[in-house]
Length: 444
Image 1 (cartoon, rainbow, N blue to C red):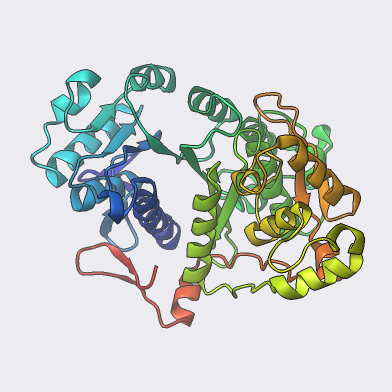
Image 2 (cartoon, helix red, strand yellow):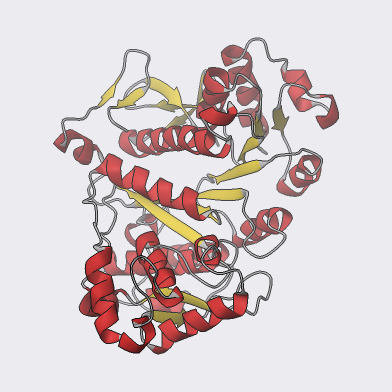
């Protein structure tokens, strides 16, 4: 049973809720400024933020006796603060009745000029571009079908986890052809809870023998089955290896699962407490956008920038592949090298001949295909078996980082530093309650 303080959902756990809310609020603004067309277009491109678990828009932290914005509250504030052209649509979906009622109160209080009844009414009679739905997923998707969303971000923030069938339903409704751009997902994953447990939620057992599991362990495993949509993950996770490594494997498996719909899946880690590890997983098919997201996160967290030396690497490449490079001089490089360097610079995602940053080098697909096959034959690329949602014939690859390091002298990308209260403090940043009752993260 949910508990409320005024209109805010009551939660415990100071740092977890605060950090997550602030990350989402910052990311919404960062994302909107890019996808709305930026200053040059006056942020006029149609965009939408869709919250499938909107909550009430506010969260009350018991330990502090303070209220802060939830993710839906941040989207409301973003629209109020920046969206002068009314190009940003908000679709706030909350199935729980009491929670939804509090959400309407928050909107009325924070946007007093917006009539809630209009937001709840027929889509074609709503000029506010704020759409409120107290409906289940299927009914919400039907109502949303007539809304011209434009570039859209969908945030899944369930109480524990989002079922894979829901991911499939929403993605299938939006992403109609091969890695179509214009849709992003953010999925919140309670990573460490599965390995450490929390309250009545049991940690995973360290064996894959069903007969030995307790009833509580069985429930946790069934929940993870729903997260993945199958049971194949069990054999790779349910063993007595180091917890940290198993958590990494767990996230990697889920990342690979999401690549059915998204070329680029970026798990952003954060540690509310010393032993906890959660992830906000950004899913996108927009190469430039996901690269900017990673750079933005890395810069904010002080990740060491990896500077790759193109000239040095190409000199090594020419020595190794003299016959391929001998007819190219000056700034003219073989297609194989152009593709390889584009993949090295990007660092993340699954790659194939249809990637936008690869297609720009060569319009003829057979030539791109031959170049990538050459890179595979020469050990720079590793083929991967990632079935996609459209049954495409394209071979997918990842970069063979260790081989590239050994042969070309490029540096391996550094793992992302998890956001944590300590991380902010260590760089003279703050993680303190502000006068308004909101948490303040200086520099993020």
